[in-house]
Image 1 (cartoon, rainbow, N blue to C red):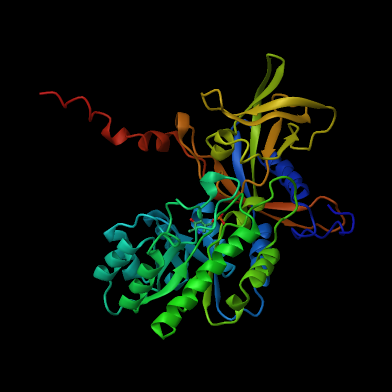
Image 2 (image 1 turned 60 degrees about the vertical axis):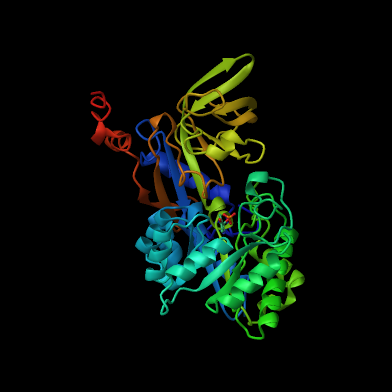
Length: 458
Ligand SMILES: *Cc1c(COP(=O)(O)O)cnc(C)c1O
């Protein structure tokens, strides 16, 4: 907690994320949500989610028409999506499954944007029937939409462009490189002319979409991509002599600070960078759509996991925990690009202190690389302790990997309430996703077809 904030103030902005997490871990262990029977679980800070959404809305004051959507892939859990819908968000989806989740969560079709990179004809037909907005990835897809679109369709239709402004520090997260797979590569010879022609041919094509980068990209790079997209919209409208492009979907991709509790960069800094780079963007001539994922959820979630054993190998202390590649996939495979802070907690869920030991924090998967933190200095972990992986509210426990047939871990939401006269806040939990049962593991592994391979010989 920052020294200036009163101890009863439990709003996320007044109390550092890791202090809130400590209270929650203690209660989760006491309630048995974490322990021998439940050795790993994900947790979502509902107050934090609300505060992050508020910060996003407050960053665009007085902007006449802006729809902020949440990128469903960042936390594809129906209760999380419903909470976001209730907070006034729209939803960005990129597959039939995500569209289904968004509708089940209660988003109005007019607040849903479909961006899948490889839309089938059926997917397009369904999106048009439901009335969600669609961003075509390329000109062939525009032609496909043209052939499927009924004349009374209500879906807003846009075209994704790649302004080719360059990449950030993580190749796999950089969407605006010269050879990116996304959108129409604007700087390629003839591409701009073809885009203008497509808008001329299809008066229902009224939006441009660009999602420049993600983790590892600077605000300046993101703003430069949006400036290119804005300039293209102005060019199309000027060339056609009518205001056909009425909406700009400026994507998401604000990076997240994984090093400490500070939210950096903020949505306010993002909006300021846009104002500086594209002064006309907020003047109300274009409806704006944003698509944020990681920056809304990452710092509002954590993974808790039991330490099952500890050992020494070759002079290295290793903690064998239940959080590995099945729930922290990117960190395990790309540890330099996706380092996570790890917290050490005792068997009662209290933060450990005492002398630090250099330790590997390993997971339960049967491959040698299943390590979430290499040579990390932490208070000495022992069997029965717990570890916390901070800032894992987006793309971690919500996106599990079924390696080794490890079950999907349970996910809980929590809210903190001040109790009068006591330092200790009250923590309320609600289930978001049940831990996967062994029956479900077997069913998803083809149990219904158990005999299928026995009778293929004549
Ligand atoms: C993934 C994605 C987003 C959100 O990215 P974050 O880095 O999580 O903010 C937005 N738009 C599109 C098209 C995406 O694919």
